[in-house]
Length: 79
Image (cartoon, rainbow, N blue to C red; front, top):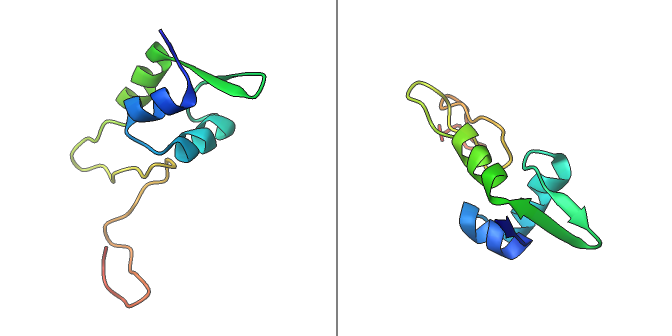
């Protein structure tokens, strides 16, 4: 199955602009056909599985960066 960017974003539960950023960076496999992005269902599932949370691992953000639970915010509070 193939998805356009809106359908793929719904599948991943992210905003289409976020998915476009992930596709442009190569984090999510996609093809550009003319001006449209095309995503394969198998690639979207593999992307989701690669992002599974494992206990003891810092959760990844939508852009793939890891958050450390000991980071301090601007006011010196942990987030």
